Image (cartoon, rainbow, N blue to C red; front, side, top):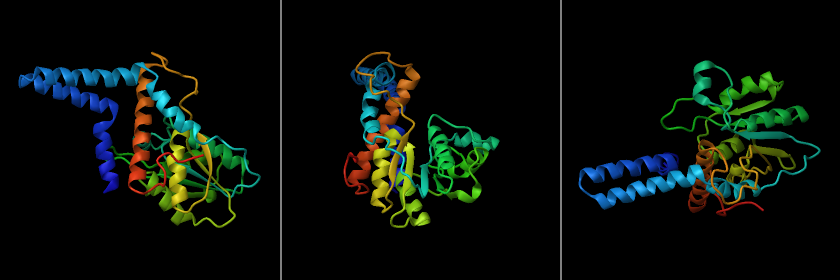
Length: 263
């Protein structure tokens, strides 16, 4: 139930969709002669889009998440690497059978690099299909094609393809891997996603060393207008809002112990 409610809530609350719904509400208000309500909806829609696309608000919201876990020095020995899904274009790969990467593809590239650096380490790819309305191939189903092409043997891979969100990533991976005391596992995911991911793996009883990748901010953006192109700014704002809402929801539901894990 949590999965479905979270997806439905996010569908309505993400900035672009929310702006569209507010504009639609404004048009309906005009039809029914509610001019003040129509003006309010239009102004709110404009502010949401303008702040998200034309300002550095999104980057300023995302940067604290990315700074929460610094990338540590590599340990001498690594028993396994866990990479969370979110790096592939699932719909395209389902149709074409390839391994097209999206903007989060650094997760998979970094995993291949780490796997080559630690040739004895197991590689866990955790990620099924987490969409309600879009068909696509889960990352754990696509990853063997890319990792194999990059020289990571299939005998090293552990594929968890049932999870639909980060909570299930942690729980299902813990059940599948059953890590032993004293083992060293790296957790690879986007830097902005690491606070929630690390907290969930800790809660599931799977100790990991966070290995953040896929940074979206420089940390030097500051307050300003037109610091990036509007499409990228809107995407960054959307990711930031989603991640902060996700942290709050997981904390309120008891799935993580703190609203802003880390440190």
